[in-house]
Length: 380
Image 1 (cartoon, helix red, strand yellow):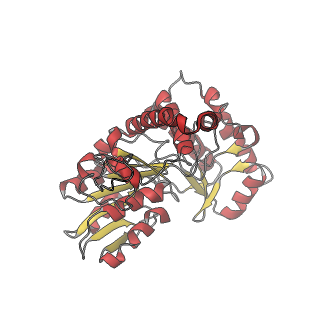
Image 2 (tube, rainbow, N blue to C red):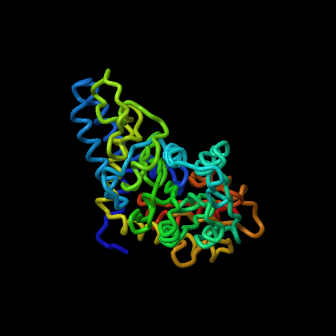
Image 3 (cartoon, helix red, strand yellow):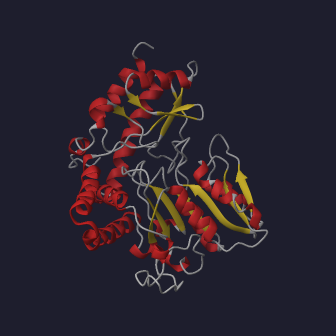
């Protein structure tokens, strides 16, 4: 564990930790004072300057685009700002040039954000192949086994929302790249908690909203499109800011920009982008590897303590499978009752698919884990 990081200092940026034992970043993260200050900054600029603030704000947006690219090992021109994870998945699903008879392979346990955009391709003659889990897990190998010569895309969450299972993205990426299959990744339960390198993993498209492990706000996200693919997929939602001469208003020239910003169809959510940028800056300040190490350390403490107390950790703990999510059950107590008892004791956590889900982050400290077990056992 990195000993020089002042985790208590980062904790002070999250006032929610004063009132709540917050272990729920996989749902919605608490807002930090750093993010709020960034949103206040852009609001103040528009309050004082109106349209005259635009040049300064756009320069900051460009810098945030560079930071977002650096966080995932991409180039700035491969990043588009989106409204949420679903928006990014829609860009990929509706941008691929499908042929009748093509199929998409995915786990059957995906969050709906990564399901409905692909289901919507039915009228184009695209088959959706859902792979059922084995002992709660869908592995890269299981997805690969279902692919055939008609498979055009594989889509999966890097981390499953209901189990915390991290898929072997590198293996999946190698297979897809070698066979010309698009790989789409839903990173909402991974980015901000785990280090992601889109190039090493062979990812073609990646989508992530800002309100979970990214520690930003709802209503903002990023979409990554591999540079080599930008000109080969359609712009699903044509808009005025995606063209080369966007400021020549009455010259209606549908010539797309040469980068991923062509997928940004209209005016930007500057408040959301500023908040996201402030959070990304923090991750880059700490380092994605150190952030991941810290979060896995905390989830390890939770798993160890739960098992000692007779609970069953249902999240996979094999090599490379761990994430920032820990799910657990009890052999005799209902998970809903456990969750209700924790909620009544000011513990922020979730109930997902019959298990209690915990998801710590950098605002948590070792004392939080001790307090969690005190609250879990009090009066039980």
